[in-house]
Length: 154
Image 1 (cartoon, helix red, strand yellow):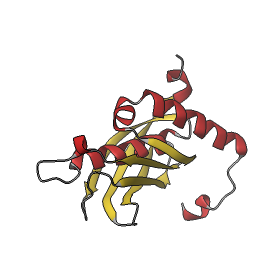
Image 2 (cartoon, rainbow, N blue to C red; image 1 turned 90 degrees about the vertical axis):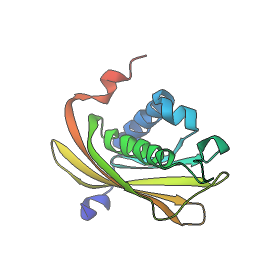
Image 3 (cartoon, rainbow, N blue to C red; image 1 turned 120 degrees about the horizontal axis):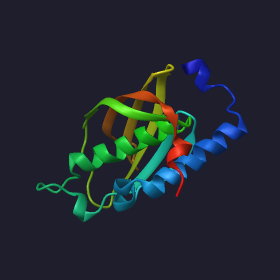
Image 4 (cartoon, rainbow, N blue to C red; image 1 turned 180 degrees about the vertical axis):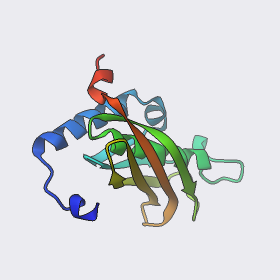
């Protein structure tokens, strides 16, 4: 899909991706409670940021793995749903090559690796502000028939 990533994205598709991202950032309760913010989104990709707080630490004083996973998972959700077709996780895994701590700003960058009519695979890198990789997440989604817009009615 690397050739496709270099394609020019129609303005309408990018605007729709932002509309979906703003809605998800408001409605996803983990994102809201953890203070996650979508910084950038395009169809199939996004960047989400979060500040680690004391309440997010495990017993040995580093960021709980579930918190890093939650950030990566939210970026995965935004990127995979940004096309407008509802996408739900089939599987996901994460590796934690380095720790983070309270006060760190974590940034999750989600990239669509491949997409078909029914499935898509994503890679999400979670890094500290100094560029250190603290989480490497991969996930596969099932692309349902319904549209995200159907769920966006308030």
